[in-house]
Amino acid sequence: MRSFYGLIAILSLAALSAFSQTKPAASPPIPHLQRQGTATQLIVDGKPFLMLAGELRNSNSTSPDYLKPIWARMVAMHVNTVLSAVQWELIEPQEGKFDFSLVDNQIRGAQSYNLRLILLWFGSWKNGVSSYVPSWVKTNQTRFPRVQDKTGKGSEILTTLSAANRDADARAFAALMKHIKEVDTHRTVVMMQVENEVGLGGDTRDRTEAANKAFAGPVPKELLDYMGSHKDTLYPMFRKAWEAAGSKTSGTWEEVFGANEYTDELFMGWNYASYVGRVAAAGKAEYPLPMFVNDACSMPSPGRPIPRGGGRPQPEVGNIWKVAAPAIDIRGPDLYTPNLPVWVNWYQESFVPENPMFIPETDGNTGTYHVFYVMGQYDGMGFSPFAIDEYSLARPGQKALVPADLPLARSYGVLAQLAPVILENQGKGKMAGVVAGAGEAAQKIPLGNYVLEVSYPGGRRPAGAAAAAPAPPPVSAGVSLEATELSERSGALFINMGPDEYLVAGSGALQVRFSPNTPGDPIVGILSIEEGAYAGGRWVPGRRLNGDENGGGTSLRLGGDSSRNGLIQRIKLYRYR
Ligand code: DGJ
Image (cartoon, rainbow, N blue to C red; front, side):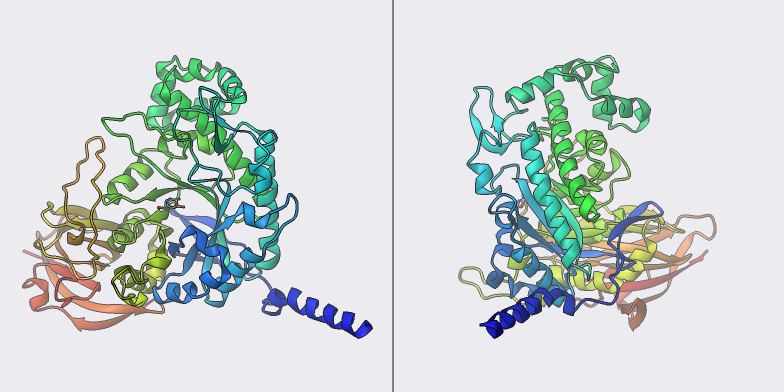
């Protein structure tokens, strides 16, 4: 009997030490954010890290068997960071009793493939709905109240106006972070997403009694104080609403911002941000990983100038999120749009400038070329197409695809080579990004001593761009996008490596001409173009492309139908009369 219990004890100890057996002598520093010039970088193992990421279909983390073959596919696609969900109902099936086996499985799996993880906390809300809350929350509506509409009808959405809801979520999230801290000594988990696409749909605001009372109550003083001291950097629509209502320094929501739908939006923004901010802070108190929220953003348009985001963390509520949720480091737009550059420009340029650029969800087809834009133009710290684990799976009537041959995998392959150079140059004004389509006018990009004139050559399908049906482009104030076929678009990034030298990399076909951006001789000549690769951060030249491939010495040509030209090229220029 004794020896039986002895054996059990030994086996239990062995199981418990599964993590610690592979534990390094000292853990690397905790992943954190750090500024470099105008960019924010994610620091992993003490060094800047570029996330070539992908989000798994959300239910796939709930089955270890289902998850198992996915890791190798991610590695084959040059993915280095996987976004994967943790569902509240599965880690806390009974109140206060936690089961982290699915979390451990994800960490162990990612770690064994040398991948990093971003865990997505599906707590109170997933896509705005409370579908992943534990059954002890779902079935106790009295203790855990829900959003009501004007008629008093409830919904399967937990109200933000309940301390019981918030505190139960915060306790679970804190327990999760404590556990990650204990088991993840390798720092496989690098960031956390808190909730998923929060925001109220179906009504402009919550109509519970508690919500009505708060709405009729005063705008919080800390928000008004912030508005007073940051007037010049307030989001224009937000500032305008405040000024139009008389720039009051106290009053109810409708007194301070006016009686309209935008005020409802601001009110919901304050309540979602306060709730999510408290959950994030409780988690950070246990383990301070960088934390972000993902935003199912909807852009204002001439037909709909007041967005109906129900408090989503989007630009017109950005100042409110900043004040109410200081524990949230990044608001990341989920962008499934064929004209992502227009949306990213709007998201980053029109408000709170210090929001770091991370795209938690996007489309994997357009992502093939959009990723170059995000990295080059906005110092993106990461880019993450959704359901990436499914891209190579067989579709009905079709064979499975080879993960490494997918267009996105080729883009990630190029970016994986360039990551050290990109990270070195982030935040220094030395990079630019572009997306160009067939039939579109050439874009002029001043960068260093030259202006780069970039266009899509001809109207043919670029090698490497996947064909996909384009969604109708959203219309935004002052911007229109030609209905260019997705298959006729390319993307590239440019790095100014020296006074007369550029590194160009991308997906699809592009032509780049150069003109002077500084005084001196008026004509720009091409000294040399090399295609090549980066290995260990060092340029390894391949062919010299100074003949047919450079348009008789007039331009750099990237990719193309015949793939005659490589997807990474270095060009040296000179000037003459
Ligand atoms: C956006 C959500 O954030 C994801 O979790 C997922 O539901 C996708 N939509 C599905 O398209």
